[in-house]
Length: 132
Image 1 (cartoon, one colour):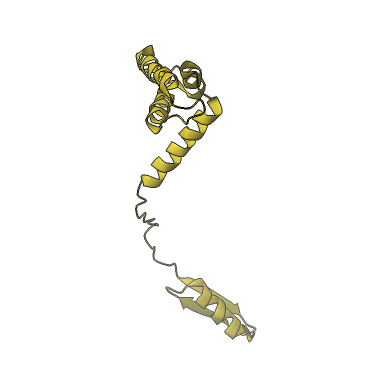
Image 2 (cartoon, rainbow, N blue to C red):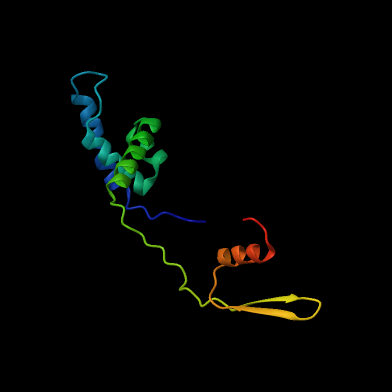
């Protein structure tokens, strides 16, 4: 079971008092909550979670969740993306390739050193007389 370390109810209570004071002093009943209060609520979510914070501040769970997602999106956009270089293994020397052709009177051996696979395919097609 994973338990979260909670800094205590002091910070949550402080923000809740600020929200309550804003509710008492706002000009209109349907006024939007100030951005500073939403920022404080989002900061509390990092410690208490969305549900506990919404319940403790008496604010809408869905709206708080939207503000958290927007803050995460903005924070993610501010992180500069750096250049990432993917380095593969160092090139290894190619093995020698030996082609043996058995004929009625003799065996022909062709040893090819350091030849790439596409070149080997073209050579094989040319020896066989196939059009590539």
